[in-house]
Image 1 (tube, helix red, strand yellow):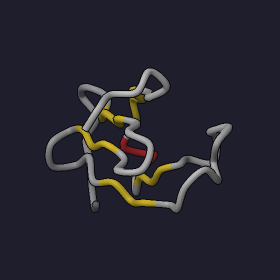
Image 2 (tube, rainbow, N blue to C red):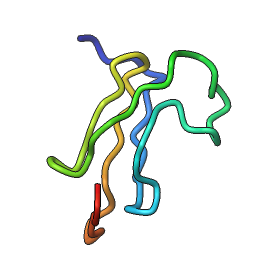
Image 3 (cartoon, helix red, strand yellow):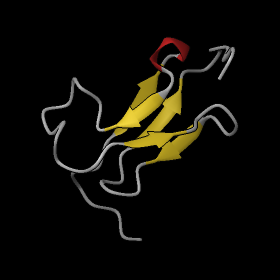
Length: 65
């Protein structure tokens, strides 16, 4: 997979879970189908459509997800 210059790295909080891309706050919120991403196991996940990487903020505790 090639890395595009437009890709982003976004830090998320436990309160943002369950996490999906695109997020409502994004300017391109309707650019691709919504996909749910699991950051609770590894601390990071990458969207298969746009390549945006989501990282769980250091020290965040995930409960119930």
